[in-house]
Length: 116
Image (cartoon, rainbow, N blue to C red; front, side):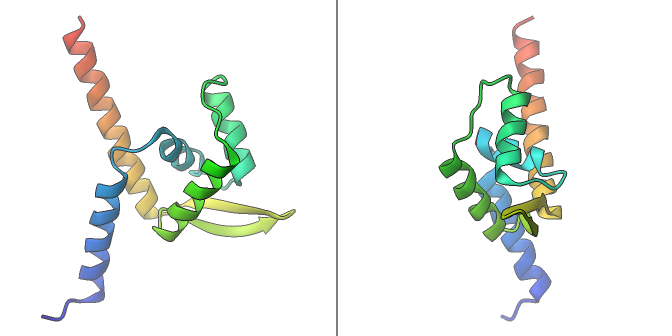
């Protein structure tokens, strides 16, 4: 049976969503930070600031994650500035981030209900 390009892409997108949700903190923060164009070092600095120094992304972790996320279509390379690659979240990446945010909100809501 021959499937259309759109059907194949939908299956791939669904697979990516299953692979990434629930997300690692690294993956979550990378997508969160790439809602605006940024480079690896900028993401590291932003995460350090957002988490008040609690999460420090190592270069190896950061660049491995960027490479995998780009290959999987969650982020895309935009341009290079001063030898730094600038990335931005894709539509698929935003969908994955939204799924994770929904999951986190549910966890928080459930924890609040149980611990009242």
